[in-house]
Image 1 (cartoon, rainbow, N blue to C red):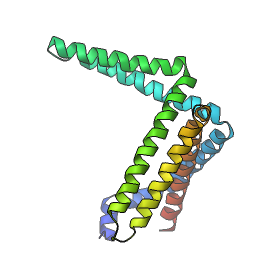
Image 2 (cartoon, rainbow, N blue to C red; image 1 turned 90 degrees about the vertical axis):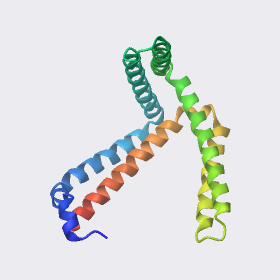
Image 3 (tube, rainbow, N blue to C red; image 1 turned 120 degrees about the vertical axis):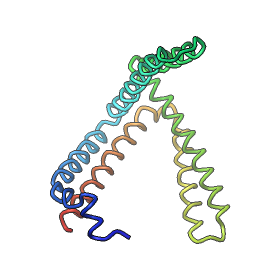
Image 4 (spheres, helix red, strand yellow; image 1 turned 90 degrees about the horizontal axis):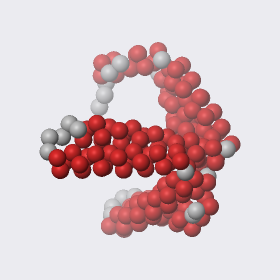
Length: 185
């Protein structure tokens, strides 16, 4: 259990002094989430460009790493891996709508698998307290995955943008709540 002395050693007073920054960032993120919600197609394309940029950077880092490896077989493996990764990132910029379709399908499949696993886990926890909540969350996740998969490829124009807008808004809300809690204590 943390004491007030522990709170001082982890920098709690410094956090309290910065509550306004947390509030400002939270409000900005909430506004960004609302803007993204206003144009889900643009938010989807921005999400794809972000993923593509990260993949290009990862591919370049793989290529740099490839020439740090001492044996020829491993150099070839790392170089090929890096080149393919960077190529996939470039393709996200060349054809963002195709990339959003692929990512949406992968998200739907991942939600189906995660939901099925969580549902199975909930039933294996039967007899323990709150096992039903685990099973229910599995059902909701499974249904979300099926809804995404059933609407594919049409929904790939807006699903990633919707996820981005909801994520921005919820992160902003949590930062604002954190700032308010800091100010009150």
